[in-house]
Image (tube, rainbow, N blue to C red; front, side, top):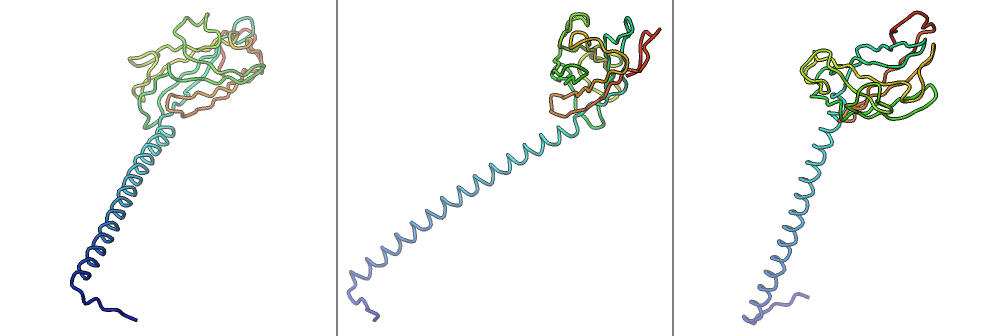
Length: 193
């Protein structure tokens, strides 16, 4: 059953064969370990980046402090939002933000324009209320007015009309505001929305 190798030359060849098999196994194990380490490093960096993006979406939001509309001939022709940074947010550049306008008779996405408010069309513009920039919220005390020309988007808003405004920052965080025009606009120049 067991055969003993008594010839000295053959004993050496068996030892070399075993050594070659052992070295091959070590090389295969080293390559497999390298692949596993690279994969783990890649997954860790990918997970870290995903976590940072998710954190930015949650924390880099804006708050809508107030909203009002300019009344002209018993219709709201401009919708104005006063915005600020949410707690813990980084700088928010409103030129890279979008506003989704839904209602009362049209839905569209507004983008930033530096044009004057009367020529906005399907865009919005900004003005500084408090702070050093007219389009970037740097500090939580900064206030910026976001101006949308209602008739450029759809038609002027009448009494009782409602518009859903969703502001999406460059980080992907969203803030939704429902602007509802009061039931009576008679003898008014501006109304709270």
